[in-house]
Image (cartoon, rainbow, N blue to C red; front, side, top):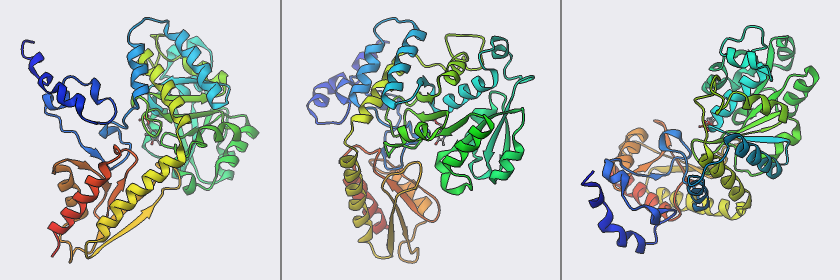
Length: 394
Ligand SMILES: *Cc1c(COP(=O)(O)O)cnc(C)c1O
């Protein structure tokens, strides 16, 4: 322990006088440096492996506040759930352990209802409806959130197949918002089929703000449950998420969460700090000037685009994904007879450099978004990309 106070304290004055972003002033020890963990500029986006997003100071303040006193966990969830439901104009809400956790507890609740005997029985689903119908194009890895608690996936492609797949075993019609454009059945038809057969519908909207309207649209449309990640576009705690919609289903989902111990969701704990952090992140997001934010992101991408375009043999493409991660994005590619490096190798070089820069892409292109950067970092990214392209120019 003796060595700890020595680390970083000497730099404190220096840190305080800088105009560094976010919560930098509160950091007395340089933990990442101390641990030998490299930090980086996030030009990639909201990735769990990259620790998601950076929380606004008000969110961190709420988390700090929460850490100072005891409250009853259920009472706090009740009150925050009501507040979030008011903000989102729906029946009820609860703060979950990420979007994945939201889906797991929702699924558990849909299978057991309010039956306490069934609650302790999971993941054994004998005697419960346990099938989830999913479109083939929506059938991605995150369905594990549903199968983890005992559900079975039934894959369909057409509305006709969906109607024929419905039985007494059907517990949920699950929709993946990110892949809306790939499926034959779109939102309203999905909801209508659910209503026709009295099967609840859930829309996984993990990465679906912006646009802010997505926080309101799907409950209006008739989805019974909606899930969001807390630590993606909402910039709340990365370990939190939202489940909102119909109260009866959320009440059943809550039966599977802490403090109740004999449940499948006991490990998906959120405590008062994350609950308050999530509430404040949502409040802050709803108050954001979204147009201004969008304009900034576009300008940042434009700057990086121009910088890359100035190198011979390089081509760039501005694009905005239609659903999920719907933000100004850039693809940079080049003629490898003019710039002699593969995009994947280029990405490794950006990561190894000083400062380290994380990007996305594959062996065809280098992908950039600016929304998770600290404003100003786009200049460094623009400079480094051009510098590195020039280094490999023939
Ligand atoms: C990120 C993501 C999840 C998981 O969200 P967490 O908040 O990290 O638990 C689930 N579904 C989709 C489509 C996602 O993009």
